[in-house]
Structures are given as structure tokens and as C-alpha cells.
Length: 374
Ligand code: AGP
Image (tube, rainbow, N blue to C red):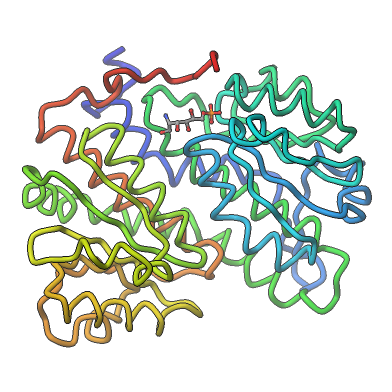
């Protein structure tokens, strides 16, 4: 066990730090960048015979649980943008509780690290019965979801041992971004955008190396938050998923109450919680939602909120004019890949909070790595 952890104390810590490599493996052989613009493409072997059917779908439905659901939520905007197909989200258990409509003309995408999650598997059976094209995105070759879907993509993140999913999350987002690129690859009007994303993907492992240098800063932040009862995380757009996933990490391993919230919903209830004591992380990296997040920060500030703001490098002054926030500066990348960078400091924060609070990092109480019962 010690050998597998290498120089790290815990699997979760090792898996957070190996993300530059796991992402490289996820992309290996799948991104083609030649001399001319035309040769920048994505090759997903497991999907190539099904892309035409996917492009003709009436809807793409993402189905998953927990972190895998959050990864799909992070990828949803780029899927919508590049495919032009409506994309809906389903938590597997909720789809089954409602027996929600799934049609023959749907492409149902099942996202699961283990490929064995009971709720996701049951939803797959349901979608197959309803005649949808079923696509699997898993980390486990030969898993039930890999075997029972019509086609799919392995994320190739390597074995994930820590119960809290970290490197699988980032690899899942990258695979779904590549899925969006593959579906949209026949659309000339989005070619420049697709090429910019492919360039961003090539650059991603370096950006992750850079953001991992925040480790000490996140440990220092964890020391400040160690005794808190509760933590809110506000995000929107591409980073709504980052807010949900960051809060899930803190909740499941640090055993601290934490909620990820859509910043656009702030005035519709959560604002009542704001005071000088409750710590709030606001994700405000540079994208089309930036000015709206600046306004959220001002409104929270006006209510004396205790703010920790995540922003793009160089933006500290524009998110914290009064100098009263704690600021986490992260490297900038193409907007749809920013969630992959932004989750890393929150994974580190959850990890350090857990160690400092004295809880079991790799096996949080009451949780199993793979949830094989309903
Ligand atoms: C992640 O940190 C959790 N342990 C959990 O939410 C997990 O993502 C969920 O149970 C789904 O698992 P799967 O990806 O193996 O299907």
C-alpha cells in the first residue's frame, strides 16, 4: 500500500497531484494537431461508427451520480455550443424515481468512474428498454456500463483508490469536451473555436502543474477554516459544476457542511445566510459571466460576507477592490476547460481540511468507492 502511494501520505493526495499525468493519458492518441489548421482534430475510436447517429439525436441526456454527474454538468455548455443539440441532465436515481421520458431519438450518455454504480446501471437498463443510443464514459475497462452500452470512451485516468473522486473528475470533463469536439467536427462555423479548445487541451497538463503550486496556500486556507461549521461555494456558467463538486469534496472527506450554489440564485434565498462569520468561496474566473460574478462579490461584500474569491491570474484587483477578500489566483485557460483547473485548489482545500480535522482521507465514514446497491 505504501509503495502505491509513493511519496504521498494518502491516495487522495497522490491522485490530486498526478492529474497532469492522468490528463495526458486521457488525451493520448486522441488529439491530432498537424501543421495546417485543418489537421487539428479529435479521434475517439469507440465512437467513430456512431457519430452520425449522435448528430441526428433529438437530445443528448447525461446520466450519472455524484462527482460523475458534476463532471457532465461542467461539460454541458460546450456540448450544447458545439453540437447545437439540446442537452439535459439526469441524476440516475431521480430519472428512475420519475421514470422520466427517454426516447429512441435520444443519445443517453452514462458517466461513471467505476462503471458499476447501481443507480447508473439501472438507468442504463431503462434507457436501453426505451430504445435510446447508449454511450458509456467510464474509467473501468470491462465494467458493467462499458459492456452494456452501445459505444463509449474510456477516460484512462488510471486506478482511483481514494473514495473521493479527483483525477477521474478532471479526466471525465476532458473526455466530454473531446466528445463535444467530435460531434461538432463537421461544422465549419465553429472550426476556430474547436481549434482554440484543442490548443487548450494540449496546454492543460501544464496549467494543472501550475495550479498545483497552490498546495501550501490551500493548506493555509484550510488552517483558517478548520473549525467552521459550514462553507458555501458560489459558481455559475461553466463553474456552477465547480461549486457543486468543490462542496461535495469538502462534505464527503472533511465532514464539514458545504453547499455549492448557483450564483444566479443568490438573491432567491441564500443571501439570507450571509453574515461576517460564514465563509463563502466565490468562483469568478475570467469568462462571459465575469462581470456578473463581480456584481455578486459586491453584493456579498455589502452584506459583510466573509469572502474567498477564486479569480484568474492578474484579476485580483478587479475582484477585490476593497482588499478585504482572500483571493486565490488560478491560471487562465479556454473557458470550457477552466473547470478542470478551478477544481484543483478546492480538491487541495478538501484534502488539507480533512487531514487537519483528523478524519480518514481515503475512506470517509459511511461511504464506499463504488455504490453497488440502490
Ligand atoms: C465522489 O467523490 C463520490 N465518492 C461519489 O459521488 C461518486 O462520484 C458516485 O458514487 C458515482 O460513482 P461512479 O462515478 O463510480 O459512478
